[in-house]
Image (cartoon, rainbow, N blue to C red):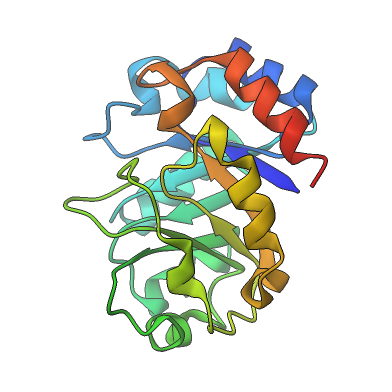
Length: 212
């Protein structure tokens, strides 16, 4: 099972994640986020980060130029689009770098209808909880909302995942929809303060999830 730890703001913690075998580190480039990466790390410092871990830039309704500049200046491997980006916008970014398109899922959403126009313009999807504003809410995502959907593209599962969810995750992996599950996405439930991870919690979670 792959794991993405989002909202990283300290390079030393990214290196710890790499040592643990975490697959993706997310850096948030949304200025309104309490985990806005440029508050603590300049682009030069982000670019210096090396290792097996994949650097993901998370953007909310940024311009094409802003995104592509950050990809170059920070050495990002993937871009996660977490706003209201159109299929055409995603396509323009995907011509340059791999794209994860995030969707906030509400109770009455027809998921296959919601994602249909993005199949050819995004490399992966991410499903999160519907909420006010943009970015992750930290609220529990009702994963059963995905039941019955045929996603047909690798997806990240997000939405308030916490240390005690390992059994729940294992149960989800046995559902038909999980045939396309690519990675888990964790963030706020593993923090001491916004942007600073409790590395012992992350380490124990990684150890347990990698056994699934």
